[in-house]
Length: 272
Image (cartoon, rainbow, N blue to C red):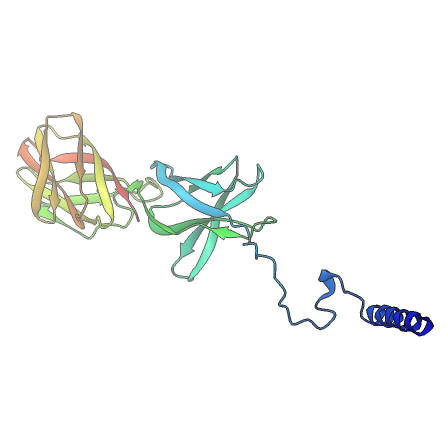
């Protein structure tokens, strides 16, 4: 009986010793204990992005040459964020800031005064945590501005009966829009200008002669439109000239004692 109690007691001690030799590790420490279980990485979070877009670009004052650009920004930046307008300069092969505006909600309005041109534009917004900088898609825009018809000078003049086509010099007519056009009785006079990139022409005409004259516009030598002017009258001769690259203004005598004599003040709507 004594030996049996000793064997039972010894067996219990052995179990106790073996149990103490290998403590159970918590689940979170499996890797530190050399486990081959793979770690589960947290799902990656995409960086937030902001978009910029020119939603509208147009000429809002063709006399002064004002371009108005409306842009949209999403998500909307802080109110009053400075938003530049860039123009691509082909000769320098670089972007140049030509104006800027300040955001209001997700919208910005930018105005700039530019000469007639065909240029590419974009808007930009700088980095603002947590968003990186953003650029809008580029937009090519034809900007038509009124300018004097004689800004680039006359290509040629001619006519019959001592024709004279005299452009008022810059010190007297800085707009380069005025000229005196005359010839002898029964004669006519014409002058050609480069109208490439122009879409419309407006001619104010004042008949200074003692009779009737006809003023006409030509696509090179092809007549497009004309008007008869009585003695000492004023009128307008306006016409769409999109695609016309050489515009001719011609004055001819119809019936007078001295010949045609017309004062002109002419402007064209052009991208140059």
